[in-house]
Length: 91
Image (cartoon, rainbow, N blue to C red; front, top):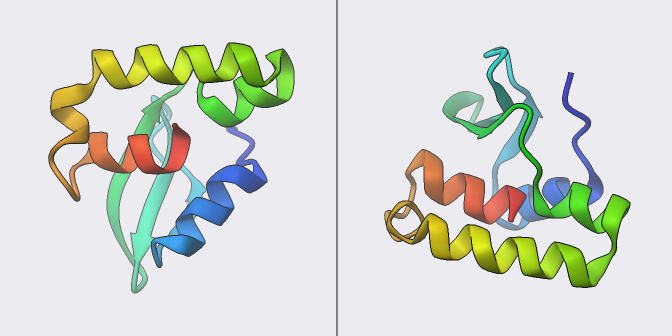
């Protein structure tokens, strides 16, 4: 089960959503708004900003974030999509 760190919880709160460990075994978190699941995001087994920050330090995490944002630019541009939620909550 994925350990949701304070970074992700704080971002969820800022965007008015709730996050819980995903019921989909290939995803990290489920995103809920008004009690309804709106997205399942984060590939289980891949890194993310809060975990890199905790385990590798800020410089490493910032570099991984930069590369993630370049790689997923099209997904991040579609507000409300699974890719957008992943970018907001995990990166």
